Length: 150
Image: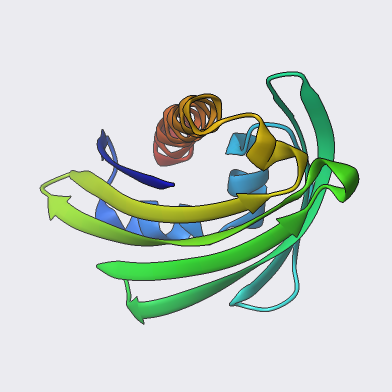
């Protein structure tokens, strides 16, 4: 499964980059996130509860950040397990383009799923993934704007 999109965020690139590396901001924006622990500048651990179609599961996973060219670009990889519900693993490349006082955020993500989740069908999974991504970036844009004004 692949997801690509972009969003214009009403904050300068350095503010957006810092927020993407702030566990409290991420926790507030990730749908269903119960816990997000930063073990180092590049390693995070998360616990997220999601409902995908008829399957509701608590996922535990790890995310590794790779700051390739901060603050213009970075990538992340991760994997998580939802017990009997299955697993997910993947990664994303994120580009941040400065546009005056705004930032254009582009992402290109790829994911692989298995277990009960994979049996739900690619349309449902793709649709749910797009909704979750849209929910995250909408919340993120609002959160960064809130921090920007403070």
